[in-house]
View 1: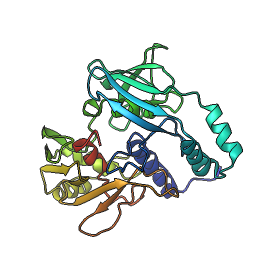
View 2 (view 1 turned 180 degrees about the vertical axis):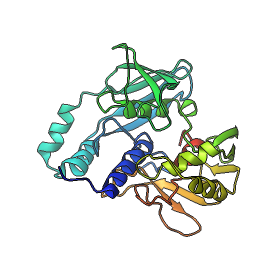
View 3 (view 1 turned 90 degrees about the vertical axis):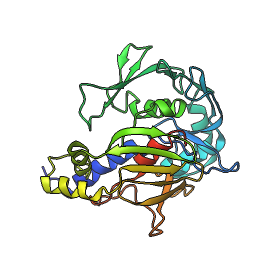
View 4 (view 1 turned 120 degrees about the vertical axis):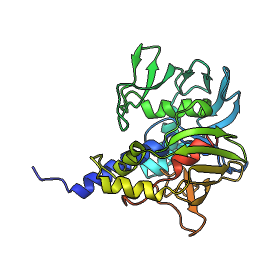
Length: 296
């Protein structure tokens, strides 16, 4: 059997990890009325539904109204099938029999998915390590079984549904220890953090294939963390990280790069952050923005 290029293995591992960051995110930042908000209902590119309205998010009566539209079907045919035809559009619309609402009780963690199945988000999985596929517990209440992190269990899709319905109740996955939070989802969001050896270890491990990091990497990572506060204007989509960088978030409307739900630009350099880069020196800022502005 031919040995796999370790660089390819590392790149593949990073791609999977970044997919876990990007997939659950709603396109809500700075969206104009002409741009439909969408939510992923499946793993494949273009498997999205349009959001018609939202009520009671983060309450015991959270509701998101959705519709699988012709534009959604076109996105699937364009981004996955790579051939937009009337037959493809018709078949895509006919195949998916989705509900028109997602509902959630954010107090109990219960919610329904695109097919009406009932789930409960149960928080951190005490038996799973930091990079496990089932880092959080999601129980299928109808089947009475726990999601195992696989595609079959729809783990990431349902984590995204829970985050959409109950953003302030969703996990915070920054590689820093949260001390306090004020004004999340406002124009003056602030999170105070501290940086531990374990936090730096996780950052060093996030460069592709998880491996035991060196003490040199951990020391260098801690030295680069010059800020113990991250801030955001969630209205404008501007935020800072703990490395002293300032960013602007905006919706990604480029159909040639559909996997990236948002664009993130470093305001000092004017350069767009490559969310799928295999460069181990890049620290992805998206989890920080999601922590500051969970409903955005």
